[in-house]
Length: 258
Figure: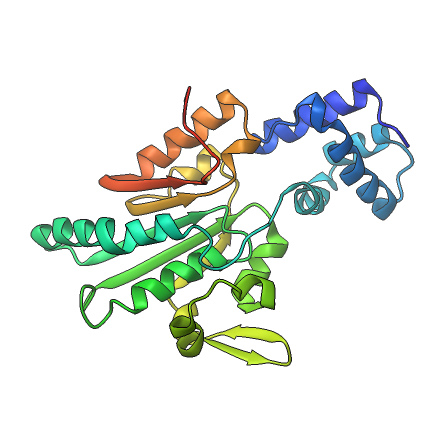
C-alpha cells in the first residue's frame, strides 16, 4: 500500500516534532515500509487511520513501537578505533590531570543514542584497565541513553552475538566477556559502571538534567536531523559538557553549519 504525499508529510512532521528526526522525501520508501509494519501490527486500515492512532490516547504506547522501527541500531564493540585511541592516550590523561588539580576525582561519560550498549561498555572496559594506575581511587560513571526501549533492555542484559564482539581485542575478551553457546556475556565488573535509560534527545525538559559530563559520544545520530533540530540537540550537548570536556560524533558526521 503506497503512502500518499499528504499522509507522508503528516506522519513525517509528527515524528519530527516528537524527536527531531527528519525524513526527506528521498526517505519516503523507508518510512513507508516501517509504517506498513505498524499498520499490520495494529490492525488499522490506512496511513490516515494510523496517524489518528498516534494522536489518540493510545498514541504514547504505539510511538514506542514506531521508534523501534525507524531508529537504526547498527553498532558493535570497539567501533571507532581512532577515537578510542585518542581518548585513551591523550584526552583521558588530560582530563584526569585537570580534575586532579581541582581535587575532583570523578569521571562522567555519556553515550547518547547508546543503542544496545556496545559503545558504553567499550568505554567501561577501557577505563577498567586504568583502575590500578591513572584512575586509581576515581569514581567512574557512564550513562547510556536511547529513545528505543527495546535496545535499552538489550543493553541492560549485556548479552551479545559474535558480530557485536568481533572487534574486541583478545585481552579485553578474555577478561570481560564469557562465551556460552554462541552468546557472549558481559562481565558484571563491566556492567556495574554503566546505567541505561530512555531519553529523547529532542526533549528539552529531560536534556537539561544531563549535566557535568567530561566526555559525550553521539555517533551516527545527527545525520537523521535537519539543521534546526541538530542545532537544538548540539546546544544541549554543549550545555551539558564540562568546559574542558570533549564531544565526539561519528566518522561520517560533521557539525558544519550548526
